[in-house]
Image 1: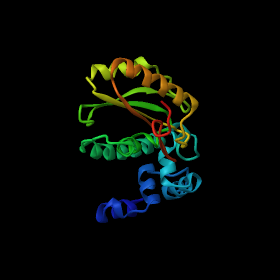
Image 2 (image 1 turned 90 degrees about the vertical axis):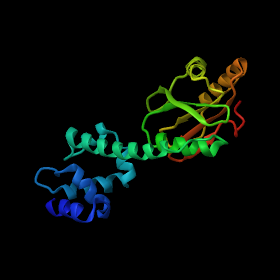
Image 3 (image 1 turned 180 degrees about the horizontal axis):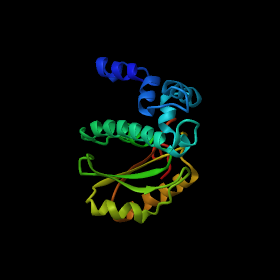
Image 4 (image 1 turned 45 degrees about the horizontal axis):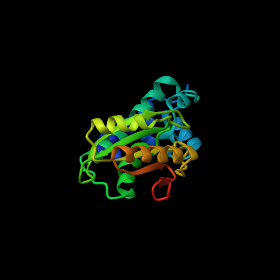
Length: 217
């Protein structure tokens, strides 16, 4: 561990391989074993650093040699990296011209989550992002949502148009029957109040899908 720490301080943490970075965060290994061995075992069993980052703290805590404290440190380290990345994206003003712009905003924020979240993007008259708010958070399968859950905050925000976006924790972006039914109901409600629903986009680790491009409404 001292050599690993010294190298990180002397040459920069960016020079360390994934296994050494994980070992630094873990601090110690299982009883009587070095942290590097535990880090290597974790990477091998999960298959990649990205897979480790997607692991739940509860799942990590159950692994031999990790436990709650190390699992919390790992989760915190990955979350800090995610927040920094999202923070840099937040400095760019989003103008929604189509599916690609929505995916560029949503994928880094939502695609890797192990639970489902639904976000409302309220746009101004030039289709620039006015506000983004999470309006539902669910388990690993679905988030229940009503048209009221979408329209109420959109009208409060003074939106000229809206986009709905949510993730599929399964990794498969294909819209479900529930996604299609909800999109049709929301599009009808938006038409009644004169608020254009420009799209409903699904993002996942396996890609993305536009319900409007697939003819859902």
